[in-house]
Length: 110
Length: 116
Image 1 (spheres, chains in turn green, cyan):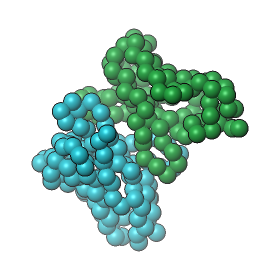
Image 2 (tube, chains in turn red, yellow):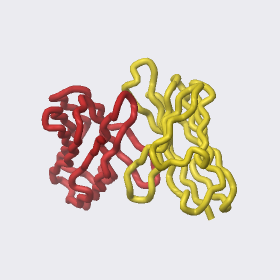
Image 3 (cartoon, rainbow over the protein chains, first blue to last red):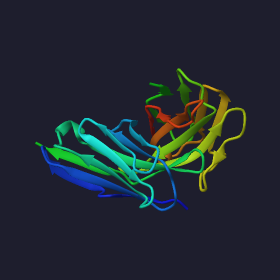
């Protein structure tokens, strides 16, 4: 059974600082997804990582995938308040189903 | 980008009534749609996979007679919560796989269901 675990689950940080969210998964997969969720809202797609060594960047967020280590990271550079949200990673199980991590609730303080 | 429309955004109903939630892919065809539920401050849990023209596949522990799923066309799937009870109160989110690549999953805006 595929398990997806995120670390940390809660993160409070100051504006301007850097930090990394980790996503580990238990079975082989060559793709991984990152999503953002604001309170009371649905999921916004951030990154689709499709191969080992994939790295994608959008603004202050950068995601990478190491399929051998079964690990993905979401790195936040010089955090700003607008990035406060809950971030989920998700890994496909079989052809279509996605299994989500527990989510990381990120709070960025001025 | 592709858009998935989910309706209604929120609904309040009395215990024992049924509620229907619609999920439409607006600018693409989706042979497969997924229904998730999310309790407050928790992750998304897959309830069922809905395939156009066939019966839905339910995850373990999800009552198929309580959560009726219909995927009658390539752009519409519906979830009906029958005889709703307060414990069914949750945030329900649909998603759809886009053809032809089936690589990206697009999410609806979600439906907050509150059962009194």
